[in-house]
Image 1 (cartoon, chains in turn cyan, purple):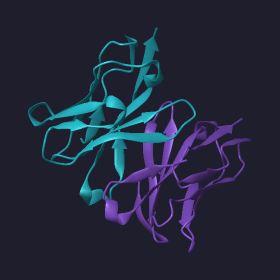
Image 2 (cartoon, chains in turn brown, red):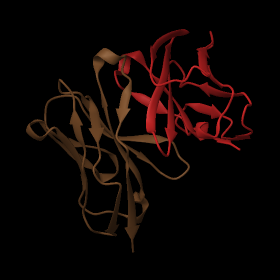
Image 3 (tube, rainbow over the protein chains, first blue to last red):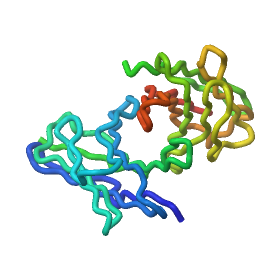
Image 4 (cartoon, helix red, strand yellow):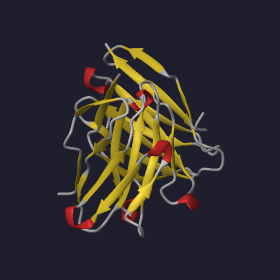
Length: 114
Length: 113
């Protein structure tokens, strides 16, 4: 069955430390891959996306993600987190055949401690 | 401001009632998507409209319906509301020329009591 999995429900990280959020997908073909962030009371903001080409993708707010076909993964990273990075992060996949609709993972909540 | 406007931001209503959520897409975007975010189901695609026509349907209940008007705004109608319908409802719009270039609104939080 097609699915998007974010194994970590909640991650706590110290300010200034590195962050890695995991995302695995299960689809017949390589889908389009996205990371969104949702701050409390806000909508979803696109951090970055991967369609093809270079497997290391740079996004906004200092985030990057690496696509690994062999592992069906698209993990999100940030070298040094800021208190403002506390939010919920969603991995999403899309297939061209589905009129560009997105399937989201369950989300990972990131808490940043001082 | 993302350019996608959703009203109201918050809605509290009783079981059995009917509500209408409204979405104004980004200027020029022809596609509108509705997503539901609930604690138990996560973020789920409900329905998509393109230039007034329904294009795709997801896990949308029969009690829910939607439409897109000639001015491209969309409304999601939820009827015979149940406690489990309490959720955050997002609208997103997409420019057909931008592929997966979604813009999400800030959502309508529906609480059914």
